[in-house]
Amino acid sequence: MITEPSGQVLLFKFTHSSGALAGQSYWATPGGGVEQGESYKQAAVRELQEETGIVCNEVGQCVAQRNFEMMLPNGEMVEAQEKFYVVRVRHREINTDRWSGEEKRVISEHHWWSIEELRTTDEIVYPENIAEILESI
Image 1 (cartoon, rainbow, N blue to C red):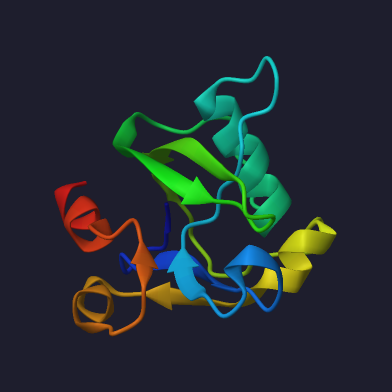
Image 2 (cartoon, rainbow, N blue to C red):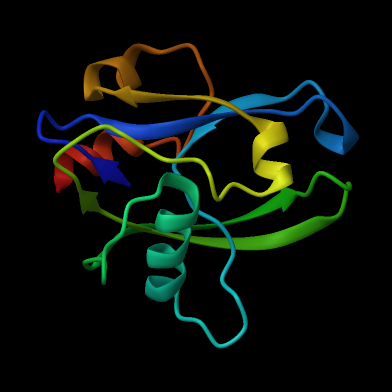
């Protein structure tokens, strides 16, 4: 979870136009899979740089986690485990030059959300309890 000085958090809007997830749209934190031999913290540092251009050497303690079953764009069901870490930044600029082709296809926008916006939105946001997580840190 990337937060800026006023406490707003960066979320990406994922919009699927094809495949098994066609028609689905939701907001989620930057992140991604853990590669072979990589810890969750190492994956968080790598994904942060790949998806936002933000460079940091390490993330803090895990502030939340969830286990759930999810469908991949190809229709395959997998058991997923997500761990969330907080990275505080001083500015809102992000760089998407390192996005994969898939990220370019499905991430349609980004927005810095306030806790109040998260509490009152009709949009689908993951993790569902992100406002409570942010208030607890």
